[in-house]
Image (tube, rainbow, N blue to C red; front, side):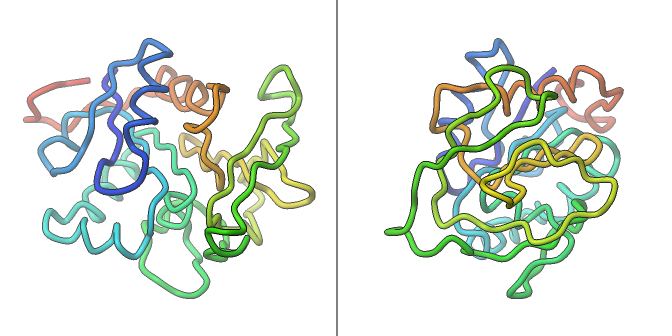
Length: 203
């Protein structure tokens, strides 16, 4: 299993470090060729509109959509949640693969960023809470019936799973708690997805 982290913007290096601490082979992804060589993908935080611009030359948005739709496990954090969701307010392009309605920058400006308690369901194991680092975070306003809510900040869903897609509106890579990244690896371990034919590495 070869796990990629989209390395166009944001603290992608911290995601690589978290995955490697769990024993995964983790590599940065910046090009279509590198994307074709991974069997799971992290879409990190950053600025979603800037990330869309940076993806355009390689057609990465469409390629990522195709691979996740074909079964590749994915984790989106903060801006990654916006890019994964099928309804974004204010409106902007997205992958449209996570049936959620999200509001961009809902928790305020950079100065309003905070560490807040996330209450977890039993599916996430013990302890039943974790620290969530919220930096200009989106808010999940609505989820479809087949989206599992795994964590909440007060009443807001902040950690969800839909099939092999995991989404966290906070930054799990900025804490010592590795459970969100482990959840991605568990999804990948249970997946039969393989890198597309003709890639240099076949998962």
